[in-house]
Length: 125
Image (cartoon, rainbow, N blue to C red; front, side, top):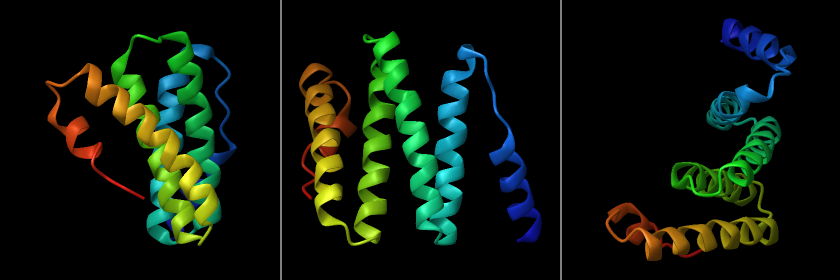
């Protein structure tokens, strides 16, 4: 466990300044958020999920026709829903759920051949 914490601290101090690492950075932040979430560190998980969300938003703006990025954006919102539910902040959870739902509804309507979008579209807060 100490080795994991040391690794997380080292990664936290790394800054990548090149723009072409956007997707890798977003993925890294999502993974770090997931690790902290699993460890019960909701504040740290929230910080990493929010960083990942911002990078994913930027990528979606740069590549608006990329549905994989749009799905990643939806998943980023849903991870924030889970964090805010765990922190008992229902209002913020609902805000992010609404954003998740908008994206999932769009994907379900425009990509009916992808069953998971139709399934996810039935999830309620």
